[in-house]
Amino acid sequence: MTSSHPFTHSGSPFRKSRILLFFTLLVGAIILVSFLWPLLKPVRFDGKQAYQHVLAQVQMGPRIPGSPAHHAAVKYITSQLQRHHWEVLLQETTISGIPVINIIAHRGSLSPRLILGAHYDTRQLADQDENPDQRNQPVPGANDGASGVAVLLEIARVLPKETKDINLVFFDVEDQGEINGLPWIIGSSYYAQQLTVLPEAVIIIDMIGDADQQIYFERNSDTKLQEEIWQIAADLGFSSRFLPYPRFSMLDDHTPFLQRGIAAVDIIDFDYPYWHKTSDTPDKVSPESLAAVGRVLVQWIHQRGW
Ligand SMILES: [Zn+2]
Image (tube, rainbow, N blue to C red; front, side, top):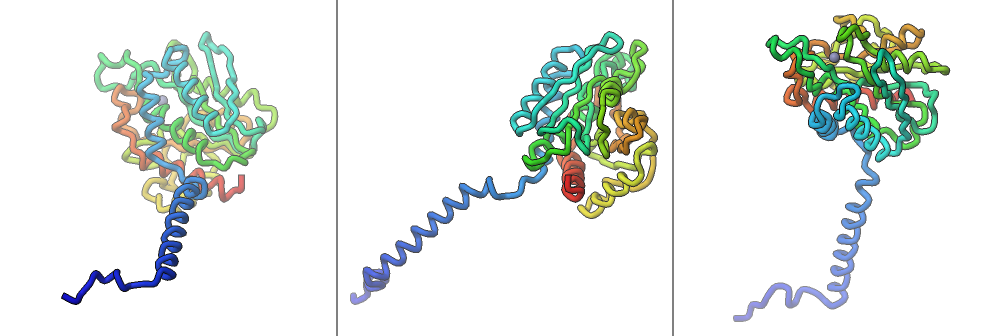
């Protein structure tokens, strides 16, 4: 029995201390990198986080202007924005007897070069529902309302802190048109009227979360801006989601800006079978669709240098 454990003869005390030093440095480096990684890694638009904002809004209930759920949405959007170092201004008025609250997020300038907008109210009547008995019910607004807000909130998280030339605006009372004689796009019309310094561009996102996503050029939108944005979508591999052909012609929150001569685009996926129905629920929305729109916009902002 002459053999012994291989490590008994393996090294001098000097060699052992070098091995110990090596492992100490290795462990130290691992701890340091794991501590710094969250600070160093690039912040990327996360479709799953955006989807959580969809769920949170739908859980509040229909965000009908003047309702408790609508009030909860204002609080939620405001607190999410403040958490990511945006200042929040509530632009309040009353139009046609309806309280209107546009939520404006800025980081210093209220005269930005770019406005990104989405409506956060939801339609009080599901008047497109297949079932006539459901048409007096409200729309849950997972896609029509919550999806645009969700993408804006996730953009608010990922934009660099030094972003000065962008305002994020959450428009109220977009979606109550033709109910008791109300017009559409009340909040954005009021906001556009109040602008004293005009932005270079306005991008509206509406109904962009459909799991079966196809976003076409909207016919009234600024052609040059659309081509720029859809090109970025193609570069990012989203050409099956962003189709560079005109399809629908929309009256939406971009309209009041176009009327003031501002280059504006409506990014909308109007092929949505659950539009203004009680079936507009979160299972029709996907994190991947939210991520596609969010990543395209973040990349476009980056390329523009805004
Ligand atoms: Zn709608």
